[in-house]
Amino acid sequence: MEQSKIDRISALARKSRTEEGLTPEEKAEQEALRREYLAAIRANLTAQLDGTVIQYPDGTRKRLKKKKP
Image 1 (tube, one colour):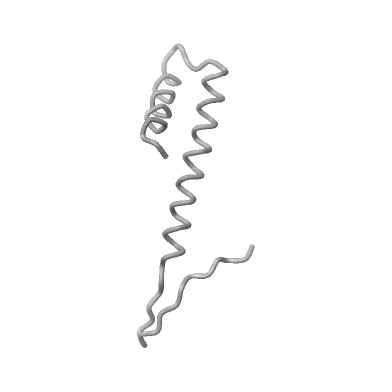
Image 2 (spheres, helix red, strand yellow):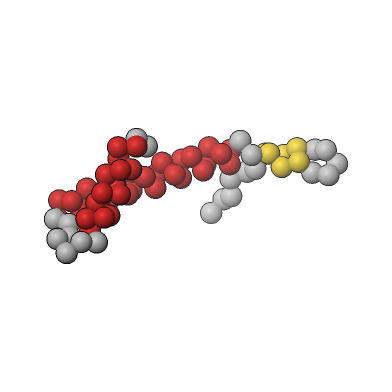
């Protein structure tokens, strides 16, 4: 995610804590940016876990598998 979008999320959060608050358009923008931010975090974590390997004491290595729901 671009730094400018993260900065915008922070700016909207600061403004929401003021007396002025956020306009409905700003609230919608904030929600959309938060959803995009969370999606980026989940994608990064998934990529990191896909590259994770567990090494057992006997020296064998095994990749993590996705858990079935």
